[in-house]
Length: 384
Image 1 (cartoon, rainbow, N blue to C red):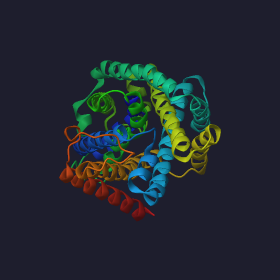
Image 2 (image 1 turned 90 degrees about the vertical axis):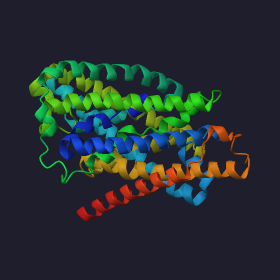
Image 3 (image 1 turned 135 degrees about the vertical axis):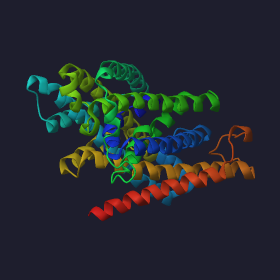
Image 4 (image 1 turned 180 degrees about the horizontal axis):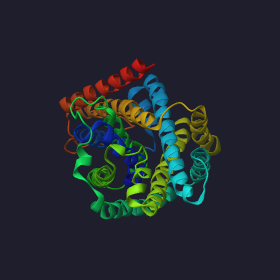
């Protein structure tokens, strides 16, 4: 479930982000984002594991930070989730259009709406079923990326990794940060994964969370190397259509199918988690909760609000960044409960040896996330 959600639409935007910002900045933001996401996953895992009952993100915020924080987190969470679903659907539409173009197929717009319809129906399934589907669909994704490396290797040129010109003063130097953050974040998979590991140890649970993240990084690195090495500065937003002329329609067709599966698994996993949030945290019945999940992103898409890569980068940097701020504050509250010896009813017994107090590290990550969010918001405002 974790790996299936993390390895999604973001992987196909990463080569383009590297091509625009340069390998240097792409790698710098990989390191920074990996550290940030690793810690946030671990800390959110602690919040989820040690809290009694079944909850989702907004529910945790209300329990630890109060009703005012819950309202703000609800707005942020809904925005991040809706735009994430939008990103998955757009990418799914592109991949379907790429594949059907070989047979005089339909437009990207039609395929995106078809993706919304199919993904919405799949969101009616239970979480356990979605986890199984995610597992079986993630295997061919990883297999294709290895396959792509094998067939692209003879076409890879060293100069394609250094075709970005002025690598240090690149105007798109910050672009990979949001894309990386979006690509690596798997917050929505942590609570349902915790439900599965409820009777296990915190060490086993956190180990699974960590392995899933580093598996995603390894897969992403192979994919970036393969695509960027072939396409260089001509890398396209969806990564695959740009390699058609070099590697042939067959590879693009296979890649489009695999790409569709990647974003489809992420879409249904996120949609199911969002539906669970409405059901558990807001006590909304199943069908109305489902409608609240699947209808708004379709409306946003029909409004045609902007370019795909910009939506993805902002969703990662601002949306996931703000969620990260809430995670740090909630985790700090659990540590405070431990420190003063107050075993509140909503928190399970916590052993001091199982949760380390890292106040300085929390502050550093918090300041870094806030700075990135403010910088991206400033960029958005300056372009208006």
